[in-house]
Length: 109
Image (tube, rainbow, N blue to C red; front, side, top):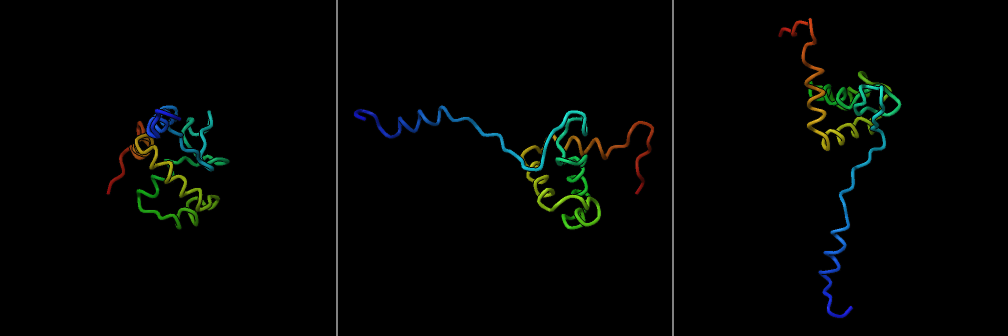
């Protein structure tokens, strides 16, 4: 390779590389389930359901012990990983879930 520097090869290589979308073992989107939003595969538990409970004081241990006993700890942790990668999307869903619906009164403290 006369006349070419190792840098030019690296530059050519990086031009052809695109960002890889993270894949998730347990998180899926299924049309018709949870409005097509991300949920734990094989369940109707939305990622936003898990995150909302964690934001409101539940722990991973209480989630798997009492709230969602059918979930494994790995599934809860993957919900957290998905949340880190899709924070804006999940924050909107949590906010909608926490706001009073039409005709409902807000909770009093």
